[in-house]
Amino acid sequence: MPPLARRYLKTSFWFGATGILTGMHMASALHLRAGSLHRYYLSAHTHMMLVGFFLMMFMAILLWKLPPAPEGSRYKPALMGWLWMALVICTIGRFLGELVLGYSRPEPDWLHYAIFAVSTAQGACVLAFVVNLLPRINAPDV
Image 1 (cartoon, rainbow, N blue to C red):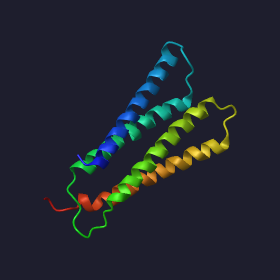
Image 2 (tube, rainbow, N blue to C red):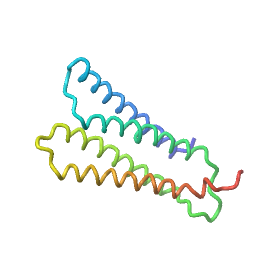
Image 3 (cartoon, one colour):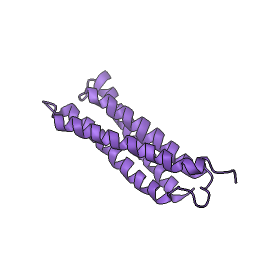
């Protein structure tokens, strides 16, 4: 497995563990009345599991299993490393922003804007990942 694919995979496991712990906290707050449950927890938990865990794991498998890009293609391997870093920052930013938003009274507008900004940046990173990967998807079988 290439080192970059391994980095994506390891990161997905950390995000998965964080998502599971958040879900356990939500379950204890809901069923055991231990702690507090805010409406933003559901979004933070779901986002951490779906984007942080599943999507990054899928990205790791794509980086690992797809054939190499043909010579002279537009594929940029270094961009995938930068996208990994940006995805990690955006995923953690959205997760922490939504947790903080659950405890903020009153809810500050700037925090809503910040969460929207990192969410938009995260979507742009996923789109850039797919566009950069297209030469490998369309590559002839080796």
